[in-house]
Length: 328
Ligand code: AHG
Ligand code: MN
Ligand code: MN
Image (cartoon, rainbow, N blue to C red; front, side, top):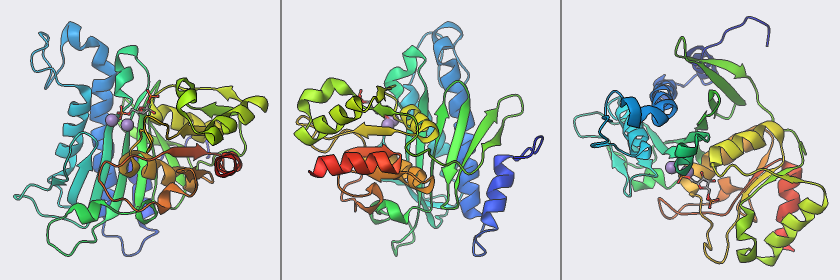
């Protein structure tokens, strides 16, 4: 990108919208509202260590009364940023068991949002990177308000997907199917600025595999063999234990991220609708591959809102090699 060209997220979204003549602007507003929520979550995540010392504005106080988990805080921020806009017909969140209806006092729109408001939150005390993951679908149910039917859609029908990583800098990465684009938050002006246009995953990229190897003994023989082969080929292990951080590194450096099924968790740990499917859309749009062990995550038809799935994401040649070993 030419030196000095500053493209804000807002300008980029408008330019992307022009690619879709039938676009009404509602879709762009959803992305913009997610970015607003991300800025608020970023501020709290970056202050988390200070809450017990100087308290924080809003929902926390210095005595720790009513101190809500950051997951719940992030969940509330996402809901409050999007519930009244008239663009969504229903939402779903990792933090809420049931579908989240749009309050009756607000109109419903034609879009659906599923999200993991704060991913990796077990790491917050260790100041490890966290994330937010989001997935946007079109409303398909006939009723005026949204329903579970609108939420249980396969990943290949996503209109947009992306994540925010709250790390050494806060980055928002999203795709609408026209490339993957990364924006870095400039806190001094509160704007996400285009820093990584048209992101493509290197293939095969760096020899990095990312998995929690503590579970090795619980894996299938195929999974054990797949990791043994990568190690024999000189791969290094990098595992942060924060999906968004491990994914972001994989997207930038290449290699593979794996959260396999095992004897204790026969469907794996990660959730299909708001962790695996959005990240699968991003990585496949960036030229990489996703799998649940036999096929693309985007082909999986969901039956339950919080269903889990084994998850492989990375450079296509590496994912294909691991898949072949799993199937052998
Ligand atoms: P969440 O904080 O949204 O529940 O997600 C945690 C997930 C994911 O971030 C990470 O990849 C995984 O938990 C790590 O699990 P293990 O500790 O079992 O490796
Ligand atoms: Mn998560
Ligand atoms: Mn979470």
